[in-house]
Image (cartoon, rainbow, N blue to C red; front, side, top):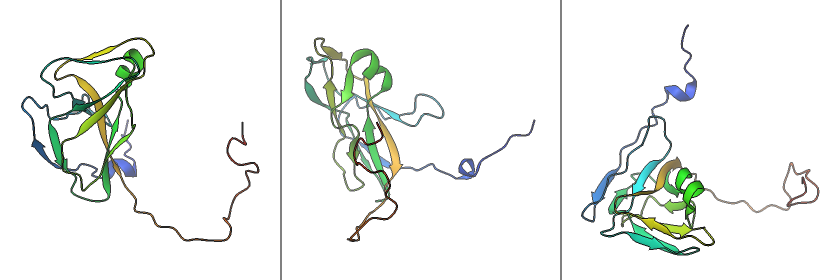
Length: 158
């Protein structure tokens, strides 16, 4: 059977960014499996960290990166299993790493449980970073918008 390759598969979507280790014991992000969209970000802490129910904590990753172009952004998302099984989310999900940012990447972790604490161990994978295209937008002020036939606005299709 002949393999078919789509136009997207033919594109080289690989990029390389400079990464600086800013804390001892930092773990360089990696993809857990081939084809994963996100690279795991790890807690760069010396001792376990407790996040109480409903609490938010800023967790260092020990790394800084230089995104080499303004047309790419780094977006920090929760890890699916941690969010679903343990209630560990990212408070500002997705967190945005702009191309001009060069300081340490921090994860604004949020325990979304109503009554259970979460314990973060040193080196634990706590979130993921996904690199995506960023479009630069501008606006043109007009008197009306074409192509609108929803009739009723927000929530009108429920």
